[in-house]
Length: 262
Image (tube, rainbow, N blue to C red):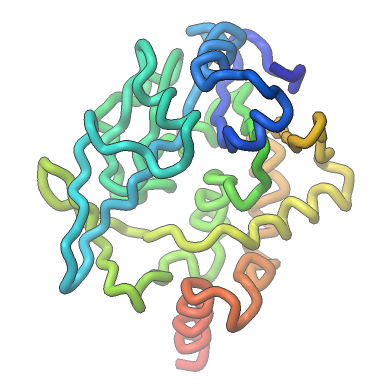
């Protein structure tokens, strides 16, 4: 693995593209990535990966029901393999569960399923409150930054509680084999989080690292909080895709403008 700055005892959330990792390390296996992260961090720290399944209730349509043990993640091969690896616990949110390993399990258990899946009482909230917490992005950019949705809620971005999926008849309800759960927020499109990425690069707060054909970032959560809260609060227009290019962002824009006009 690359020397990204990982150290024993850190708490890291990992977002990755196995295809991009393979472009830099031709013969690497998914198991090697997972085990390397655990070996470096050790159980004194924490390794977390998203295990999202987006099992929402949808009007007039068959819905996928979340099963914590069986439902595969929809965010990549590394995250799916990590989910099934030794000593990993999966939280219970029907829409935005996390796979967690190490120290974090002392505070957050498999029953964790807050009404704000990426906000208050979530794994992201735990990250925001602890030291030595970092985001590791391997082969992906800030469009994969789950912590950005936490910043949307905490800033807050003025449209954070408007559903971006009304046009698909998605309800604020997660569905699992243990029943339905009412949700406070439904996270939307994150493509324009790259504007926050470019903002941090332009002011020298972060550096885009490139190894062979793979870009990577290792960013402290405290930095994202310090820079992100004011950015998400004041530059929120930069966090929606250009008008007409993204239906979920247009949906939020429409609801926000309606609310302002009223």
